[in-house]
Image (cartoon, rainbow, N blue to C red; front, side):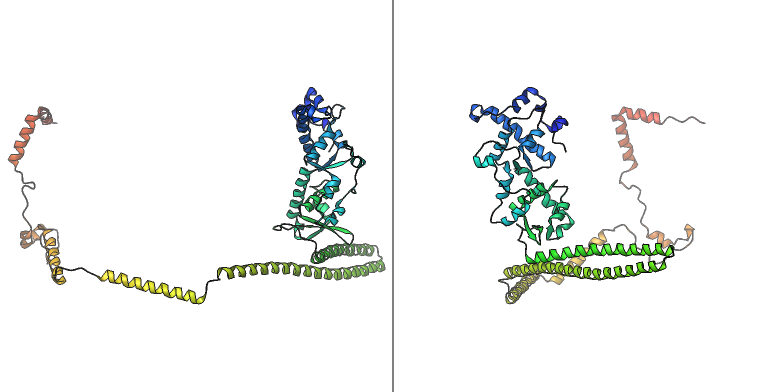
Length: 460
Protein backbone atom coordinates (compact mmCIF):
# COMPACT_ATOMS: atom_id res chain seq x y z
CA UNK A 1 0.00 0.00 0.00
CA UNK A 2 1.27 3.46 -0.85
CA UNK A 3 2.31 5.74 2.00
CA UNK A 4 1.05 8.78 0.13
CA UNK A 5 -2.62 9.00 1.01
CA UNK A 6 -2.86 12.45 -0.50
CA UNK A 7 -2.84 10.80 -3.91
CA UNK A 8 -5.79 8.55 -3.04
CA UNK A 9 -9.43 9.29 -2.38
CA UNK A 10 -9.24 11.96 0.30
CA UNK A 11 -12.93 11.52 1.23
CA UNK A 12 -12.15 8.11 2.76
CA UNK A 13 -8.57 8.65 3.98
CA UNK A 14 -8.91 12.01 5.68
CA UNK A 15 -11.49 14.01 7.62
CA UNK A 16 -13.55 16.70 5.88
CA UNK A 17 -11.17 19.43 7.10
CA UNK A 18 -8.50 18.10 4.72
CA UNK A 19 -10.18 19.84 1.79
CA UNK A 20 -10.24 23.22 3.59
CA UNK A 21 -7.02 25.06 2.66
CA UNK A 22 -7.39 27.69 5.37
CA UNK A 23 -8.02 25.11 8.07
CA UNK A 24 -5.18 22.86 6.89
CA UNK A 25 -2.80 25.81 6.75
CA UNK A 26 -3.39 26.28 10.47
CA UNK A 27 -3.06 22.55 11.24
CA UNK A 28 0.17 22.24 9.20
CA UNK A 29 1.78 25.14 11.07
CA UNK A 30 4.26 24.56 13.91
CA UNK A 31 3.23 24.51 17.55
CA UNK A 32 4.03 27.36 19.86
CA UNK A 33 6.95 26.74 22.16
CA UNK A 34 4.69 26.91 25.19
CA UNK A 35 1.18 25.47 25.39
CA UNK A 36 0.13 28.20 27.83
CA UNK A 37 0.41 30.84 25.09
CA UNK A 38 -2.75 29.52 23.38
CA UNK A 39 -4.12 26.31 24.88
CA UNK A 40 -7.13 26.21 22.53
CA UNK A 41 -5.00 26.16 19.36
CA UNK A 42 -2.56 23.67 20.87
CA UNK A 43 -5.28 21.24 21.95
CA UNK A 44 -7.12 21.65 18.65
CA UNK A 45 -4.06 20.46 16.71
CA UNK A 46 -3.39 17.57 19.09
CA UNK A 47 -7.02 16.42 18.88
CA UNK A 48 -6.86 16.50 15.07
CA UNK A 49 -3.55 14.71 14.51
CA UNK A 50 -3.67 12.03 17.25
CA UNK A 51 -6.63 10.00 15.90
CA UNK A 52 -5.42 10.57 12.34
CA UNK A 53 -2.02 9.01 13.13
CA UNK A 54 -3.67 5.96 14.73
CA UNK A 55 -6.21 5.47 11.93
CA UNK A 56 -3.53 5.73 9.22
CA UNK A 57 -1.45 3.03 10.94
CA UNK A 58 -4.50 0.81 11.31
CA UNK A 59 -5.32 1.10 7.61
CA UNK A 60 -1.78 0.08 6.69
CA UNK A 61 -1.80 -2.84 9.13
CA UNK A 62 1.20 -1.40 10.99
CA UNK A 63 1.69 -1.21 14.74
CA UNK A 64 4.68 1.12 14.76
CA UNK A 65 5.64 4.26 12.88
CA UNK A 66 8.39 6.86 12.76
CA UNK A 67 8.34 10.57 12.07
CA UNK A 68 9.79 10.21 8.58
CA UNK A 69 6.92 7.89 7.56
CA UNK A 70 4.34 10.28 9.04
CA UNK A 71 5.75 13.16 7.01
CA UNK A 72 5.36 11.13 3.82
CA UNK A 73 1.89 9.88 4.72
CA UNK A 74 0.48 13.33 5.47
CA UNK A 75 2.17 15.23 2.68
CA UNK A 76 -0.33 17.66 1.13
CA UNK A 77 0.37 19.80 -1.89
CA UNK A 78 4.13 19.28 -1.44
CA UNK A 79 3.93 20.45 2.18
CA UNK A 80 4.49 18.36 5.30
CA UNK A 81 3.08 19.12 8.75
CA UNK A 82 5.56 21.00 10.92
CA UNK A 83 4.20 19.87 14.27
CA UNK A 84 4.15 16.06 14.00
CA UNK A 85 7.14 15.75 16.32
CA UNK A 86 5.21 17.58 19.02
CA UNK A 87 2.18 15.36 18.34
CA UNK A 88 4.28 12.20 18.79
CA UNK A 89 5.73 13.55 22.05
CA UNK A 90 2.22 14.35 23.32
CA UNK A 91 1.03 10.84 22.41
CA UNK A 92 4.04 9.37 24.25
CA UNK A 93 3.30 11.41 27.36
CA UNK A 94 -0.30 10.14 27.51
CA UNK A 95 0.73 6.52 26.82
CA UNK A 96 -0.71 6.17 23.31
CA UNK A 97 2.72 5.43 21.77
CA UNK A 98 6.00 4.19 23.16
CA UNK A 99 9.50 3.89 21.78
CA UNK A 100 10.10 0.46 20.37
CA UNK A 101 13.21 -0.05 22.51
CA UNK A 102 11.36 0.98 25.66
CA UNK A 103 8.38 -1.22 24.74
CA UNK A 104 10.64 -4.31 24.60
CA UNK A 105 12.59 -3.34 27.70
CA UNK A 106 9.42 -2.82 29.76
CA UNK A 107 8.41 -6.47 29.52
CA UNK A 108 8.36 -7.74 33.10
CA UNK A 109 11.94 -8.65 33.96
CA UNK A 110 10.66 -11.39 36.26
CA UNK A 111 8.68 -13.06 33.46
CA UNK A 112 11.16 -14.85 31.20
CA UNK A 113 12.86 -11.61 30.18
CA UNK A 114 15.69 -13.71 28.74
CA UNK A 115 13.39 -14.54 25.84
CA UNK A 116 12.71 -10.91 24.96
CA UNK A 117 15.96 -10.55 23.04
CA UNK A 118 14.91 -13.37 20.73
CA UNK A 119 12.06 -11.21 19.39
CA UNK A 120 13.96 -7.99 18.77
CA UNK A 121 14.45 -7.16 15.11
CA UNK A 122 16.61 -4.19 16.00
CA UNK A 123 18.92 -4.18 19.03
CA UNK A 124 18.09 -2.08 22.05
CA UNK A 125 19.81 1.27 21.86
CA UNK A 126 19.42 4.77 23.18
CA UNK A 127 19.56 7.51 20.59
CA UNK A 128 21.88 10.46 20.88
CA UNK A 129 18.96 12.81 21.44
CA UNK A 130 17.83 10.71 24.41
CA UNK A 131 21.28 10.77 25.97
CA UNK A 132 21.60 14.52 25.49
CA UNK A 133 18.08 15.20 26.71
CA UNK A 134 16.94 16.81 23.45
CA UNK A 135 13.20 17.43 23.04
CA UNK A 136 13.28 16.81 19.30
CA UNK A 137 12.07 13.48 17.92
CA UNK A 138 14.56 11.78 15.53
CA UNK A 139 13.12 11.05 12.10
CA UNK A 140 14.00 7.34 12.24
CA UNK A 141 13.01 6.68 15.85
CA UNK A 142 10.31 3.96 15.78
CA UNK A 143 7.29 4.29 18.05
CA UNK A 144 4.85 1.50 18.88
CA UNK A 145 1.14 2.40 18.87
CA UNK A 146 -0.08 0.65 22.03
CA UNK A 147 -3.72 0.41 20.95
CA UNK A 148 -2.82 -1.26 17.66
CA UNK A 149 -0.26 -3.69 19.06
CA UNK A 150 -2.87 -4.93 21.56
CA UNK A 151 -5.31 -5.50 18.70
CA UNK A 152 -2.68 -7.44 16.73
CA UNK A 153 -1.81 -9.53 19.78
CA UNK A 154 -5.47 -10.51 20.24
CA UNK A 155 -5.79 -11.36 16.52
CA UNK A 156 -2.60 -13.44 16.66
CA UNK A 157 -3.81 -15.46 19.65
CA UNK A 158 -7.21 -16.00 18.02
CA UNK A 159 -5.64 -17.12 14.73
CA UNK A 160 -3.53 -19.71 16.56
CA UNK A 161 -6.47 -21.11 18.57
CA UNK A 162 -8.65 -21.41 15.46
CA UNK A 163 -5.96 -23.17 13.42
CA UNK A 164 -5.25 -26.93 13.16
CA UNK A 165 -1.95 -26.25 14.96
CA UNK A 166 -3.79 -25.35 18.16
CA UNK A 167 -3.45 -28.97 19.30
CA UNK A 168 0.33 -28.59 19.36
CA UNK A 169 1.96 -27.22 22.48
CA UNK A 170 5.00 -25.68 20.80
CA UNK A 171 5.41 -24.03 17.41
CA UNK A 172 8.55 -23.06 15.60
CA UNK A 173 8.92 -19.44 14.63
CA UNK A 174 8.72 -20.16 10.84
CA UNK A 175 5.52 -22.16 11.38
CA UNK A 176 4.00 -19.30 13.35
CA UNK A 177 5.10 -16.81 10.71
CA UNK A 178 3.36 -18.83 7.98
CA UNK A 179 0.27 -19.33 10.12
CA UNK A 180 -0.21 -15.62 10.88
CA UNK A 181 0.85 -14.10 7.58
CA UNK A 182 -2.65 -12.67 7.10
CA UNK A 183 -2.55 -11.02 10.55
CA UNK A 184 1.01 -9.67 10.72
CA UNK A 185 2.27 -8.21 7.49
CA UNK A 186 5.96 -8.46 8.41
CA UNK A 187 8.27 -9.98 10.97
CA UNK A 188 8.51 -6.75 12.96
CA UNK A 189 4.75 -6.67 13.50
CA UNK A 190 4.77 -10.35 14.52
CA UNK A 191 7.58 -9.82 17.02
CA UNK A 192 5.88 -6.79 18.58
CA UNK A 193 2.60 -8.72 18.87
CA UNK A 194 4.47 -11.59 20.55
CA UNK A 195 6.11 -9.14 22.93
CA UNK A 196 2.66 -7.82 23.86
CA UNK A 197 1.40 -11.38 24.41
CA UNK A 198 4.49 -12.10 26.49
CA UNK A 199 3.72 -9.00 28.56
CA UNK A 200 0.18 -10.36 29.05
CA UNK A 201 1.67 -13.78 30.00
CA UNK A 202 -0.08 -15.53 27.12
CA UNK A 203 3.11 -16.54 25.26
CA UNK A 204 6.61 -17.65 26.13
CA UNK A 205 9.55 -17.81 23.73
CA UNK A 206 12.59 -20.04 24.10
CA UNK A 207 15.52 -21.31 22.06
CA UNK A 208 15.89 -25.04 21.30
CA UNK A 209 18.88 -26.29 19.28
CA UNK A 210 19.31 -22.86 17.73
CA UNK A 211 15.64 -22.57 16.77
CA UNK A 212 13.14 -20.14 18.25
CA UNK A 213 10.04 -21.91 19.56
CA UNK A 214 6.85 -20.33 20.86
CA UNK A 215 4.41 -21.70 23.42
CA UNK A 216 0.88 -20.26 23.71
CA UNK A 217 -1.44 -20.46 26.68
CA UNK A 218 -4.25 -22.97 26.31
CA UNK A 219 -7.96 -22.09 26.68
CA UNK A 220 -8.92 -22.04 30.33
CA UNK A 221 -5.42 -21.18 31.54
CA UNK A 222 -4.83 -17.85 33.20
CA UNK A 223 -1.29 -17.65 31.85
CA UNK A 224 1.11 -19.79 29.87
CA UNK A 225 3.29 -22.26 31.72
CA UNK A 226 7.06 -22.35 31.16
CA UNK A 227 8.43 -24.74 28.54
CA UNK A 228 9.00 -28.11 30.22
CA UNK A 229 11.01 -31.19 29.24
CA UNK A 230 7.77 -32.93 28.33
CA UNK A 231 6.89 -30.08 25.95
CA UNK A 232 10.32 -30.30 24.33
CA UNK A 233 10.05 -34.08 23.99
CA UNK A 234 6.66 -33.83 22.30
CA UNK A 235 7.94 -31.06 20.05
CA UNK A 236 10.93 -33.21 19.02
CA UNK A 237 8.64 -36.14 18.21
CA UNK A 238 6.32 -33.94 16.17
CA UNK A 239 9.26 -32.49 14.32
CA UNK A 240 10.63 -36.01 13.58
CA UNK A 241 7.18 -37.07 12.40
CA UNK A 242 7.07 -34.16 9.97
CA UNK A 243 10.58 -34.83 8.62
CA UNK A 244 9.96 -38.57 8.22
CA UNK A 245 6.67 -37.91 6.43
CA UNK A 246 8.39 -35.57 3.98
CA UNK A 247 11.21 -38.09 3.42
CA UNK A 248 8.79 -40.97 2.80
CA UNK A 249 6.92 -38.85 0.27
CA UNK A 250 10.17 -37.98 -1.52
CA UNK A 251 11.19 -41.65 -1.68
CA UNK A 252 7.81 -42.55 -3.10
CA UNK A 253 8.26 -40.01 -5.88
CA UNK A 254 11.78 -41.30 -6.54
CA UNK A 255 10.53 -44.90 -6.81
CA UNK A 256 7.85 -43.81 -9.24
CA UNK A 257 10.46 -41.97 -11.29
CA UNK A 258 12.66 -45.09 -11.43
CA UNK A 259 9.70 -47.12 -12.64
CA UNK A 260 8.90 -44.64 -15.42
CA UNK A 261 12.56 -44.54 -16.46
CA UNK A 262 12.71 -48.37 -16.61
CA UNK A 263 9.64 -48.45 -18.85
CA UNK A 264 11.20 -45.88 -21.19
CA UNK A 265 14.48 -47.83 -21.40
CA UNK A 266 12.58 -51.05 -22.05
CA UNK A 267 10.75 -49.47 -24.98
CA UNK A 268 14.15 -48.45 -26.38
CA UNK A 269 15.42 -52.01 -26.08
CA UNK A 270 17.88 -51.26 -23.27
CA UNK A 271 16.96 -54.15 -21.08
CA UNK A 272 20.07 -54.16 -18.85
CA UNK A 273 19.69 -50.48 -17.99
CA UNK A 274 15.99 -51.01 -17.33
CA UNK A 275 16.88 -53.79 -14.88
CA UNK A 276 19.30 -51.47 -13.05
CA UNK A 277 16.50 -48.90 -12.72
CA UNK A 278 14.18 -51.52 -11.28
CA UNK A 279 16.87 -52.60 -8.77
CA UNK A 280 17.26 -48.98 -7.78
CA UNK A 281 13.50 -48.73 -7.37
CA UNK A 282 13.50 -51.76 -5.06
CA UNK A 283 16.23 -50.19 -2.88
CA UNK A 284 14.26 -46.94 -2.68
CA UNK A 285 11.09 -48.78 -1.76
CA UNK A 286 12.95 -50.71 0.92
CA UNK A 287 14.28 -47.50 2.46
CA UNK A 288 10.80 -45.98 2.26
CA UNK A 289 9.32 -49.01 4.04
CA UNK A 290 11.86 -48.67 6.83
CA UNK A 291 11.18 -44.97 7.27
CA UNK A 292 7.45 -45.61 7.15
CA UNK A 293 7.79 -48.15 9.97
CA UNK A 294 9.68 -45.56 12.02
CA UNK A 295 7.01 -42.99 11.22
CA UNK A 296 4.29 -45.33 12.44
CA UNK A 297 6.23 -45.90 15.65
CA UNK A 298 6.48 -42.17 16.28
CA UNK A 299 2.79 -41.74 15.55
CA UNK A 300 2.01 -44.51 18.01
CA UNK A 301 4.10 -42.80 20.70
CA UNK A 302 2.34 -39.48 20.07
CA UNK A 303 -1.04 -41.21 20.27
CA UNK A 304 -0.08 -42.76 23.59
CA UNK A 305 1.02 -39.38 24.89
CA UNK A 306 -2.26 -37.83 23.79
CA UNK A 307 -4.20 -40.67 25.44
CA UNK A 308 -2.14 -40.29 28.61
CA UNK A 309 -2.96 -36.59 28.72
CA UNK A 310 -6.63 -37.44 28.28
CA UNK A 311 -6.37 -40.04 31.02
CA UNK A 312 -4.72 -37.47 33.26
CA UNK A 313 -7.61 -35.07 32.70
CA UNK A 314 -10.10 -37.85 33.43
CA UNK A 315 -8.24 -38.76 36.62
CA UNK A 316 -8.28 -35.13 37.70
CA UNK A 317 -12.02 -35.01 37.04
CA UNK A 318 -12.48 -38.21 39.08
CA UNK A 319 -10.47 -36.80 41.94
CA UNK A 320 -12.49 -33.60 41.93
CA UNK A 321 -15.71 -35.63 41.87
CA UNK A 322 -14.59 -37.83 44.76
CA UNK A 323 -13.66 -34.78 46.80
CA UNK A 324 -17.03 -33.18 46.11
CA UNK A 325 -18.91 -36.37 47.01
CA UNK A 326 -16.89 -36.74 50.20
CA UNK A 327 -17.85 -33.23 51.26
CA UNK A 328 -21.52 -33.62 50.30
CA UNK A 329 -21.82 -37.04 52.05
CA UNK A 330 -19.91 -36.00 55.13
CA UNK A 331 -22.89 -36.38 57.52
CA UNK A 332 -24.68 -39.16 55.59
CA UNK A 333 -24.38 -42.77 56.85
CA UNK A 334 -26.23 -46.03 56.20
CA UNK A 335 -27.46 -46.17 59.81
CA UNK A 336 -28.94 -42.67 59.58
CA UNK A 337 -30.58 -43.50 56.25
CA UNK A 338 -32.15 -46.70 57.68
CA UNK A 339 -33.36 -44.82 60.75
CA UNK A 340 -34.98 -42.14 58.59
CA UNK A 341 -36.69 -44.78 56.43
CA UNK A 342 -38.06 -46.57 59.53
CA UNK A 343 -39.39 -43.31 60.92
CA UNK A 344 -41.08 -42.47 57.65
CA UNK A 345 -42.68 -45.94 57.51
CA UNK A 346 -43.96 -45.64 61.08
CA UNK A 347 -45.50 -42.25 60.34
CA UNK A 348 -47.18 -43.60 57.21
CA UNK A 349 -48.63 -46.56 59.14
CA UNK A 350 -49.95 -44.23 61.83
CA UNK A 351 -51.58 -42.02 59.24
CA UNK A 352 -53.26 -45.03 57.59
CA UNK A 353 -54.70 -46.16 60.93
CA UNK A 354 -56.06 -42.69 61.65
CA UNK A 355 -57.71 -42.55 58.21
CA UNK A 356 -59.33 -45.96 58.67
CA UNK A 357 -60.65 -44.98 62.10
CA UNK A 358 -62.15 -41.75 60.79
CA UNK A 359 -63.73 -43.50 57.77
CA UNK A 360 -65.39 -46.22 59.90
CA UNK A 361 -66.78 -43.95 62.59
CA UNK A 362 -70.63 -43.28 62.46
CA UNK A 363 -72.79 -41.16 64.72
CA UNK A 364 -76.24 -42.80 65.39
CA UNK A 365 -78.20 -41.36 68.33
CA UNK A 366 -81.77 -42.33 67.15
CA UNK A 367 -81.60 -46.00 68.10
CA UNK A 368 -83.44 -47.05 64.89
CA UNK A 369 -82.48 -50.32 63.26
CA UNK A 370 -80.74 -49.92 59.89
CA UNK A 371 -82.64 -52.85 58.32
CA UNK A 372 -86.03 -51.22 59.03
CA UNK A 373 -84.86 -48.02 57.34
CA UNK A 374 -83.74 -49.94 54.28
CA UNK A 375 -87.12 -51.74 53.96
CA UNK A 376 -88.98 -48.44 54.26
CA UNK A 377 -86.76 -46.91 51.59
CA UNK A 378 -87.50 -49.88 49.28
CA UNK A 379 -91.26 -49.46 49.72
CA UNK A 380 -91.02 -45.77 48.87
CA UNK A 381 -89.15 -46.59 45.68
CA UNK A 382 -91.88 -49.11 44.67
CA UNK A 383 -94.68 -46.56 45.28
CA UNK A 384 -92.90 -43.89 43.24
CA UNK A 385 -92.43 -46.36 40.38
CA UNK A 386 -96.19 -47.25 40.46
CA UNK A 387 -97.33 -43.59 40.47
CA UNK A 388 -95.10 -42.74 37.53
CA UNK A 389 -97.21 -44.87 35.04
CA UNK A 390 -100.95 -44.46 35.98
CA UNK A 391 -102.57 -44.82 32.54
CA UNK A 392 -100.46 -47.49 30.89
CA UNK A 393 -102.08 -50.88 30.26
CA UNK A 394 -100.62 -54.07 31.46
CA UNK A 395 -98.24 -55.83 29.20
CA UNK A 396 -100.02 -58.76 27.56
CA UNK A 397 -98.69 -62.11 28.54
CA UNK A 398 -99.82 -63.80 25.29
CA UNK A 399 -98.31 -63.08 21.85
CA UNK A 400 -100.29 -60.95 19.41
CA UNK A 401 -101.98 -62.77 16.54
CA UNK A 402 -100.21 -62.53 13.18
CA UNK A 403 -101.85 -61.29 9.96
CA UNK A 404 -103.18 -58.02 8.59
CA UNK A 405 -106.95 -58.30 9.43
CA UNK A 406 -108.11 -56.15 12.32
CA UNK A 407 -111.06 -58.51 13.00
CA UNK A 408 -108.60 -61.11 14.20
CA UNK A 409 -107.87 -59.12 17.38
CA UNK A 410 -109.33 -60.72 20.45
CA UNK A 411 -112.09 -58.97 22.38
CA UNK A 412 -110.20 -59.36 25.61
CA UNK A 413 -107.34 -57.32 24.27
CA UNK A 414 -109.61 -54.50 23.01
CA UNK A 415 -111.50 -54.43 26.31
CA UNK A 416 -108.26 -54.02 28.18
CA UNK A 417 -107.44 -50.73 26.39
CA UNK A 418 -108.45 -47.44 28.14
CA UNK A 419 -111.35 -45.37 26.76
CA UNK A 420 -110.71 -42.68 24.13
CA UNK A 421 -110.82 -39.21 25.71
CA UNK A 422 -113.43 -36.81 24.22
CA UNK A 423 -111.90 -33.57 25.50
CA UNK A 424 -108.18 -33.81 26.14
CA UNK A 425 -108.11 -30.31 27.63
CA UNK A 426 -111.40 -30.54 29.66
CA UNK A 427 -113.19 -27.75 27.55
CA UNK A 428 -116.57 -28.24 25.80
CA UNK A 429 -117.54 -26.97 22.34
CA UNK A 430 -120.01 -24.40 23.83
CA UNK A 431 -117.25 -22.81 25.89
CA UNK A 432 -115.02 -22.50 22.82
CA UNK A 433 -117.85 -20.80 20.81
CA UNK A 434 -118.43 -18.22 23.58
CA UNK A 435 -114.72 -17.45 23.78
CA UNK A 436 -114.58 -16.97 19.97
CA UNK A 437 -117.55 -14.54 20.11
CA UNK A 438 -115.79 -12.41 22.74
CA UNK A 439 -112.66 -12.21 20.62
CA UNK A 440 -114.69 -11.14 17.53
CA UNK A 441 -116.43 -8.25 19.41
CA UNK A 442 -113.13 -7.06 20.96
CA UNK A 443 -111.28 -6.88 17.58
CA UNK A 444 -113.44 -5.85 14.58
CA UNK A 445 -110.47 -6.33 12.21
CA UNK A 446 -110.42 -9.97 13.10
CA UNK A 447 -114.08 -10.36 12.00
CA UNK A 448 -113.36 -8.55 8.75
CA UNK A 449 -110.40 -10.77 8.04
CA UNK A 450 -112.50 -13.72 9.01
CA UNK A 451 -115.25 -12.73 6.61
CA UNK A 452 -112.78 -12.12 3.84
CA UNK A 453 -111.17 -15.43 4.42
CA UNK A 454 -114.62 -17.16 4.43
CA UNK A 455 -115.76 -15.91 0.97
CA UNK A 456 -117.12 -18.78 -1.02
CA UNK A 457 -114.87 -19.94 -3.77
CA UNK A 458 -116.12 -19.70 -7.28
CA UNK A 459 -116.82 -22.86 -9.05
CA UNK A 460 -114.32 -23.88 -11.57
